Length: 466
Image (tube, rainbow, N blue to C red):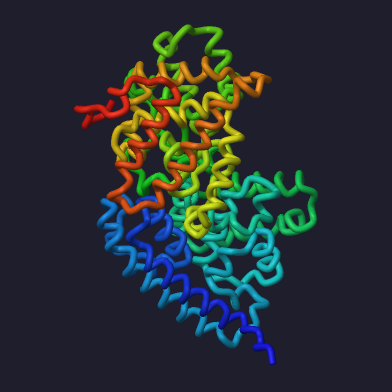
């Protein structure tokens, strides 16, 4: 006889135990970002009191070795709490909000949760209401309102944490008023056309902003993905929840403004260059000619449009699925994908890149003389000012012109990119001690294909930054 299907609770119990085993087995292979993401996504399923008890003095600014020592203990404690919650809800049917576990709430769409809350306004605890209001603040579209992944994804962005923490500092009366404000729009959220739902979401976000005294422009809700929290002064410009650019940019020197502008423009595609910078290119011949006040006004807008892009995406795409042109893959999903599927996704990203993105991808790998440099954001900021880097990018663009209809023009760059992509993906699967040598082989392939000097390929004395 076929085995009886597992109950809802038993199925979750097995999943939680198996997940804990798998995560604990690979903590030593997790990079800084995945370690922090793991803590964030589970900590968001805890009450404020449980977070304080289980996180203690935890800081995302700890060195990676200290994070690796902390995460196993946290995972074990969190797993115990999740299993205790399942046991407490064992006799429930799962048909009401109060019957659902924190992880079930995290995996549901906002549309479903607020639909249930309209039917049962007392279904959530006060701390859960605060969390759901913060998640709703992050919702800017009809599609996101119905997206089951939004609640989990929100933990990656500073705006969510600022709003959640602000709500947790508010008295219950304020939270009740905000909840009622949302429930008064329940019918529009439930039955309205997409444009009606989005109008209601704007009203809700504005009401929460007024109540908390927090202003986050809608185009900056998803800025600063996985930046370390709490934000340090050097991260202020990328802080999505900043009330405006003036407090952040006022103290920046002209050189710092120019550097920030250079970093953002290096993240752009050709289309974005034309769309965002064409007016500047008509008025000024170089960055040096742009007045600081114009840069100060432009940077927050550009930062919001670049959202979660990083100067190290060219390397992190192999390690954790942060694509350069295609949609980024969740780090946990990327970890579980076999080599062939990862390669397929990367090759699709290659095809989506324009000539400028493809040139930067190759040039940044080539100029990363040591393996650790691949992921060193500071090194790559400095690299942008290197004439050798800019010359190589321009050389690639000139050699393989954008928009060429001749297959013979396009094929060499496509083949080189595909070769480098496969080698870099293989490199990330190697033991750490084998990666530096494998990187030199990748750099040699690029040098040979482009006819670059041998002393650039194996520099004798380049231990610092370019």
